[in-house]
Picture: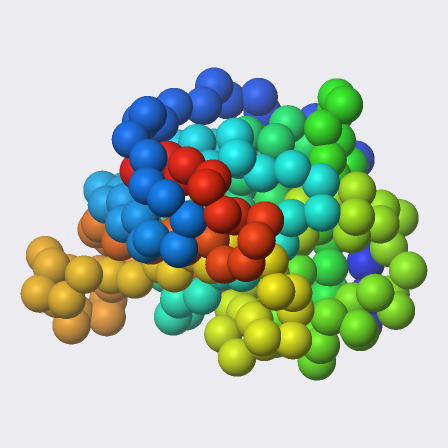
Length: 190
Ligand SMILES: Nc1ncnc2c1ncn2[C@@H]1O[C@H](COP(=O)(O)OP(=O)(O)OP(=O)(O)O)[C@@H](O)[C@H]1O
Ligand SMILES: [Mg+2]
C-alpha cells in the first residue's frame, strides 16, 4: 500500500462563498447544504478560519459527503491537486499553491492513530499543514485536544428517504464544532 501521495495537478481555483453568521467556540453550527456544490461551498467558507497546524475530523456515514466537503476545503485553502477519496493510501498531501498551509487528507480507515500519521514522514509536516481526517469517529480523542469536528449527515425523512438507490441525492446537514483552546472565541461560518 502506498502511504502517501503528493499531488501535482493544478487546483481549479473556484471562488468561495459563505455567510457571515457566526457562533462562539464550543457551539455547534449546523449548515444545511442542498447539494454537493453547496457542501463544497461550505468547505470553502470554512477554509477561511483554518491555519497551519489545524486538525479537522470528519465523521459521517458512507457517501455522506466527507470527500466532497474536503474538496471545498482544498479549494478554499488554495492547494494543488484534485481532492479525491484517499483510496489505497493513508494520506494524500496537497501542497499549497501560495503562501498558505498544505492540506493533508487522511483516510482514517487505514490509520491506527495520529502517531502512525507522524511516523509516515510526509513531505509536509503536520505543523505546516491543515490535516483533514476522514471518518475520524473514535479516533478524535487520540488525535489532538484542539480539533474542528465536522459531522455530515443526511436528514432523516428527506426526499431520498431510505431509498438507497437515490441515497446520494439530496441535502446534508453539516455540523461543525470547535474543540479545545485553539477554537475558543473563533467565529465559525454558519
Ligand atoms: N448535499 C450533498 N452534499 C454532499 N454530497 C452530495 C450531496 N448531494 C449529493 N451528494 C453526492 O453524494 C456523494 C458523496 O460522496 P463522498 O465521496 O463525498 O462521500 P464520503 O462521505 O467521502 O464517502 P466515503 O465514506 O466513501 O468516504 C457524491 O456523489 C456527491 O455528489
Ligand atoms: Mg470519502
